[in-house]
Amino acid sequence: PGKLAPLAGAKSAVAGAVSMEKLTDYKDASTYNNFYEFGTHKRIWPDAQKLKVQPWTVTIDGMVDAPQTLDADALIRRMALEERIYRFRCVEAWSMVVPWSGFPLADLVKLAQPKAGAKYLRMETFEDREMAHGQRSIWLPWPYVEGLTMAEATNDLAFIATGIYGKPLPRQHGAPLRLVVPWKYGFKSIKSIVRFTFTDERPVSFWEQ
Image 1: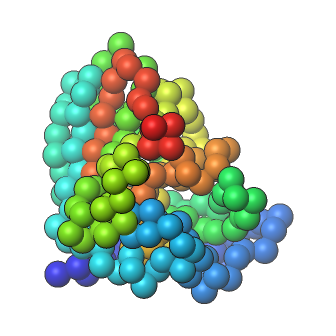
Image 2 (image 1 turned 180 degrees about the vertical axis):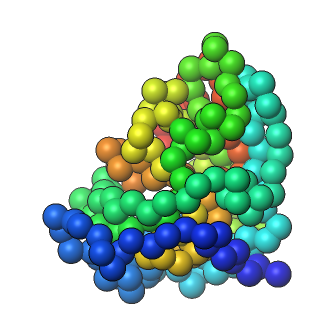
Image 3 (image 1 turned 180 degrees about the horizontal axis):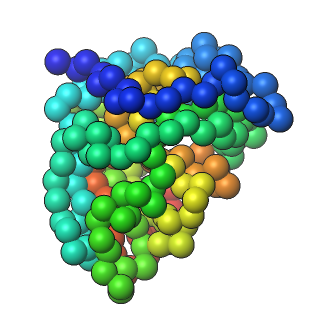
């Protein structure tokens, strides 16, 4: 129970990667994180180990031709995984350069077959106040919700990460599935996603609420 799934055939290109900047040290990237479900401080990674990643199901619904609920591992196996080096930027003025493994969000959109009237993709994380004590904070609007326009969701750069540094995605990074949108600040990159909903109404995000 709680075991992270293997990285399902992703090819790591870190050793031969061409980058304008030096990669952030793995220790730094894995121990300085935001994950408000488990607290508001940066050294959240020990608390985040309470996240139960098995079993994990993902629901695709709303204005789609193919509504479905999938096991996260099964969803990942259907995708062609790749690795991308992105600068992750925080509104707090820090940033890291890290290699993410995963698949283009556009591939998930294609799988869902959204209807012509869908304008937005709403994403939602888990809600479990027994497991994630940060969700007991009544002044925050749980569960965490984020949204993109369809143009953003199908942009070539929008990415669903399933791993980092050639390893399965650690819990503190939002295992087993998290969004990475490198042209936006990190708070848009929702962690531990359980639902993708296609809609014609603009989602009200966690931070907007």
